Image (cartoon, rainbow, N blue to C red; front, side, top):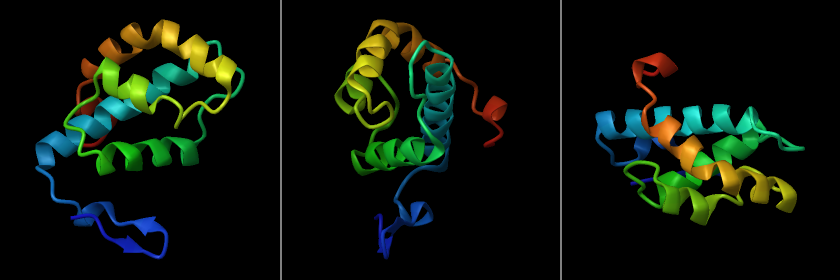
Length: 108
């Protein structure tokens, strides 16, 4: 179970299978990298990306999917215009993230 030390989420304390956690992390990294290449005014910062990762972990997300990304999309991009821009690219970005190999992200 996730625990907090101050305001820091201790990811190592989360009940998870190593393989599914690494796969979700690789998908998240690939999605954020794709998001940063989109035509948006304010690409997500590292802190915003970490916030999104925490959100996904708290939701016990096994993998990214379009609905999950759409429901949590306001976490990485903050500007409304960026959210609308990303929504158009959402199917493509999600597919690319799901195809991301774990080892290619330097996680495995």
